[in-house]
Length: 347
Image 1 (cartoon, rainbow, N blue to C red):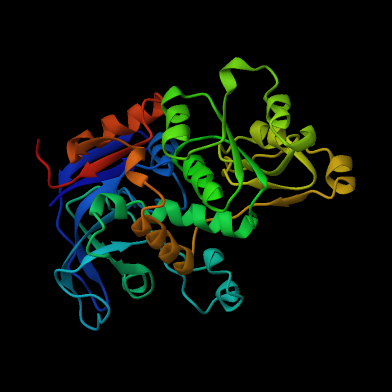
Image 2: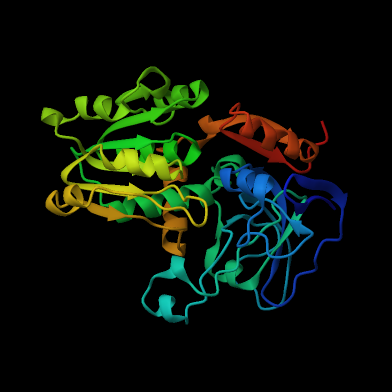
C-alpha cells in the first residue's frame, strides 16, 4: 500500500509498505477519509515522544473507512462494515481505569497510520473504540469523531450551563468545535482569534455570538469583559492555544466564581504565573482535561450524526496522499483549518 512514513521532524515520506496482517482481535480498515490535525502538525515540526515512539512510524490518526480484513475472535464488526475508530482505548485494569479515569490509562498506546490506504487497528481499540457508522453518515464527517471526542470530554467536564457566558481564545478546529458545543449547551459564546479563515468559521460553523479579532486590540481582556453581564467577566474562560502567556491572559478574563479551562496543551516544561489573590479570594475554579474516553467517542459520533455539528464546514480542501506534507505546511502558514485526505484518490 501507499503510506506516509514518519522519520523525524520535517522528515516524512510517501512510500510503498506492506499492510500488517491482522492478528487476533485486530482489524484492517481501508481508509476512505483521513484528516490533518494540529497535533500532527506539531509532531511534524518537532517530534512527539508520546505519539511517535519508534521510527519509521505510520502517521496520522483521524480516519474512517471500510473493514477489509478481520483477525480471529473479532465479534463486533465484520468485513464490509463502515466504521470509525479512535486512536486509543483504555486497558480497563490499571490504577486510573479502576477509578474510571480512562483518559489517564497507564497503558494508553496511541494509534498512528491514518495517512495510508490501509490501517491495522489493535484489538483493544477494535473492541472498545471502533463504531459502525449510521447508513446516512459519510466517511468524511465520521473522520471528525476523534478530535470532537476530545472536545466533548472538555465541554462535559467543564459543566457549561444555559445562559452562561463562555469565552474561547484560540479558534483552530478544536476551539471552533468547543465554541459550537458550548452554543448547543445554551451558552452565550465569545471567541477571539487572529486568523481570518478561522474568524469566518467562528461565524459560519460555531455560530458564536461575539467574534473578536485580536489583531485589532491591545487589551483583549478588556474587550472580553465588555461583552459580559455587568462587565464582571466570563463565567467560563477556555484557552485553546496551548501557550503559557495565553493561559495567563485568559485567567484575567474570568469573573469571581467562574471557571478557567486550560484546554490547550503547552510545550513540555512550560510554567505559568497566576495571581493567587484573585484565584483564592475570587473562588475561581481551574481545570484541564486530556484526551477522550470511549464514552465521549460515542457521544461525538452521535453529535455528528445528528447534524447539529456541521463538521464538514471545517474542511479547507480535499487532497491525495502525496499532498500531506504540503498540507501540514499550509497549516504552519495559517492557511487552513483541516484538510481531508483521500488515500485512494490519485488526482
